[in-house]
Amino acid sequence: MTNTSDGKNQEPASKEPTKKKKSGLAPSTIRIGKRYRPSRLDDSYDAIVIGSGIGGLTTAASMSKMGKKVLVLEQHYTAGGYTHSYSRNGYEWDVGVHYIGDMGYPTMGRKLFDFITDGNLKWAAMDDNYDRIFLGDEEFNFVKGKEAFKNELKRKFPAERAVIDKYVHMIDEANKGMQWFTMGKLFKPWQQKALSLATKRLMPEYFNRNTYEVLRELTSNEKLIAVLTGQWGDCGMTPKKSAFIIHALIAKHYFNGGYYPVGGASKIAETIIPVVQAGGGEVFTYASVEKILVEKGKAVGVRMKDGTNIRSPLVISNAGVFNTFGRLLPEAVSQKHGYDKKLKKVSPSYAHLGMYIGLKGDSKSHDLPSTNFWMYADEKHDENTDKFFDDYKKPFPVVYVSFPSAKDPEFNSKYPGRSTIEIVAPTPYHIFEKWKGETWGKRGDDYEALKEYFSQRMLEALYEKMPHLRGKIDYYETSTPLSTDYFCYYSKGELYGIDHDVNRFDQEWLQPKTSIPGLYLTGQDVLSAGVVGAMMAGFLTAGQIMGLKGLKLAKMALFDKREVPEQWAVQMD
Image 1 (cartoon, rainbow, N blue to C red):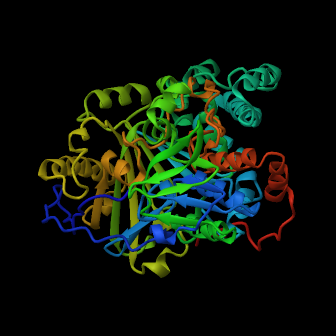
Image 2 (image 1 turned 135 degrees about the vertical axis):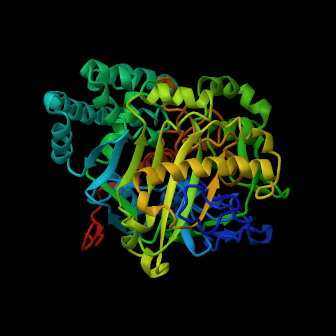
Image 3 (image 1 turned 120 degrees about the vertical axis):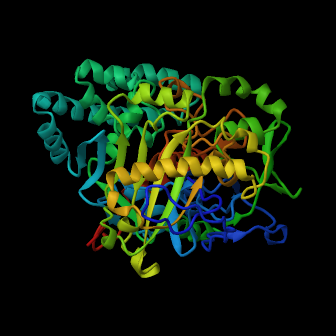
């Protein structure tokens, strides 16, 4: 979710906000990374990474730990991809890191974060009630701890106690199966098929089946199914369209609570970049790659938008498969290797609106929780989503609300007397498409009017659950799918790369090593969406590139002893 166009100022307490004159956008003051200049390039690099999202940064930092000099090229003005932050008018927001699970103790995810940041990224624990699901006026809470999670659900659904126990067991089993699925990514496609047959008995039969179908076999209680799938926005696919494995990965990821980076999301890139630099590499911003250079069938570097050619024996794309094979790689090369046909087997994920709100007064003064809100009209997730995408004037199928200032223990010291809210909702891409070729921030009155229409709807959804905030909004701005395209290079404004349906998890070609010598993939399209999913893919890519030395890399990251922190996570007051 990315920063975007003109904000609005103080809103009165009346039902209809007074429209203020549009104000010009002040640039964000957060800049992570070094500005690209051809004169700043070194003569040679061991590898080039396209894109500074968490997958690309993880690959670069991991290779740097193995003595490799890696160049990361980011087209945005700040590094981090969907983990970046921005500030404006005295406020700061993250654009994609609303919460991360499994950071409060030495899980694989936490070990990897500590490895690629040299332990310099700190974490704050959210409230034990990390997610609140609203179905109309009913509330259902997801709470920290597997037993507590089950007990809270059983309190709401006493007749479904056995179902809830079985559900959690199934989530655990599916996650165990993910280990074998991930291992398969290190093999060639034909080897993956052989491995799949060999490991089939080790994976539950529901691993890659439709989410709703699996849960419907477990229970006929539609409300319980709706609650259990109340985090579907974390992958962008409704229960009747998503694969059960992505549902299981998300659910288990938060069983032990939600966490937030101390100092905000920008600290992720800020703490990884020195590790890349320690190996002689660099992370450049304002560095737009135009094409991947291919000579004699091998990837040999990149051509920048300014015409500069940068050569390297390895090119690693963190730009997603549609960008890599559809925009960056020469068309003839993509066709020769069949990637044009492979892309037809997957689909871009849904587009979204992101609203960024600032309030005068700290989080406590406004009773802002660290708990996330997932707001639904009722239990009909799929039906409501289909209706909305057919007619965007229908009610939102989901509205997600996050309170970043309540999650970050350093927010008050950086922005005293301020607090922030973020709202995310899906949107059809096509209703914004006609403005695609126009300059960001200057797309005209009709575009601004459409944004304002959605802004007011999202605000009303917020006020429905938090009526005391009406009249307290000091500033807001809203991003659209065109903002995502402009800042994060996703042409359809997609939030999660490619869709997480059953078909996606059957694509053996979605792996680090492409069929083009010298070209690798990293990031969320390799394994799964989410910060940790993309980070795992980044580490997997580095391991495959390193060959047998990848075993040493895994030992360093996951098994070598490190100094245990005084506390795994900061506890918010």
